[in-house]
Amino acid sequence: MEEILATIAIALAATIFIVLSFSIYLTIRIFTGKSIRNKAYSPVHATVFDLLFHSQEFLSPGQSEIFTADARNVEHILKTRFDNYSKGHSSRENLADLLGHGIFAVDGDKWRQQRKLASFEFSTRVLRDFSCSVFRTNACKHVGFVSEFALSGKSFDAQDMLMRYTLESIFKVGFGAQQLKCLDKFSKEGEEFVEGFDEGNVATSLRFIDPLWKLKRFLNIGSQARLKKSIATIDKFVYRLITTKRKELGREQNTAVREDILSRFLVENVTSSHERTTDVNGFVQSINEEALDQMQYLHAALSETLRLYPPVPVDMRCAENDDILADGHRVKRGDNVYYLAYAMGRMTYVWGQDAEEFKPERWLKDGGFQPESPFKFISFHAGPRICLGKDFAYRQMKIVSMVLLHFFRFKMADEKSNVRYKRMLTLHIEGGLHLHAIPRTST
Image 1 (cartoon, rainbow, N blue to C red):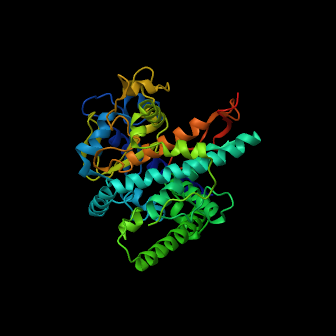
Image 2 (image 1 turned 45 degrees about the horizontal axis):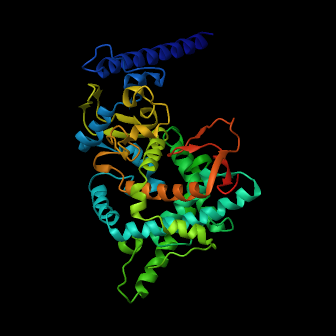
């Protein structure tokens, strides 16, 4: 009996010690974490509703997790103190298996070297003209794809279709490759790549919230087993593509201009694998740079969509040294600062009382597009790491929008359904976005 009582007493004492130690630690962190400009600024909260007050802090073992929706803080970490904020070790580790040492996942000299090289390539007229040609060709394929559903009266997953369009276009522009063929429903290779890409995205995002992901990777179970399989699928395709391209370049005797990025980094003409009607082809070929520049309202509508539904809803930087944010909040070395693009797009103190309304007119002045500060509209990031493909992305979005909206009207397959998001690195609708297409010639 005495041994049992002693065991219970030791367990209780240990529990009390742990709770007391944690309480003291928490008190110290709360006191030292307060804003220097607001003594009532409490850094510990139970919900994210406190983002209405621009920034809040959550505690985790050994560091703080700071969440902000304040454009001043975004500018501070992405521009003013750019050298003090990096991807951070944990973020680089989480992304390494999927993104490797690419420009999206590295810092310092590695990032600067890749940025310099990529900046030149994205600025060339050859790439601009070639990418437009690819976008137009794939837009033609989309008309045929959507037409099949329009004629049958069946709905289709617009999210899946547009993802395939994007991947197909990127592979053609980036690698000069048509091997992916993910717009072709009969392409097994394309299907495997698309599925692997999506699964890799999901499994990688889980690393940011799963404290046991390293154990799962070691045991090769769960999400990390799926990630390993997905990466093997992606690597197999990409490395075969690189090998093929190197052989092509080795055999190449002429000095013709190389249009795709892989050829320029280490020529083929764009062809369509589907028959196209004269009307579709004629309209698509009329979409040139001048026509794209005139689409001011479309540019505004796309920007408004990205404001409310940013591709990357949450991003973060890690403090290399102690710092003070623009709003006066103290940041300790090793703290992660998250900036929430999705939340910022809905904050009235950022966009006004109509922040939650879809209102393209907010981007227009005298009929022309009026850009906003990139630290307020951060869908394409901001500062030295602003997205190099911003113009590339707008060009692609405009072309596919112009083509599809010229030939079809769209409506939700189920107008009463509620949209839910899937946990991924990028904003993704759970279950897809199912639409009905109605040809414009129909009454």
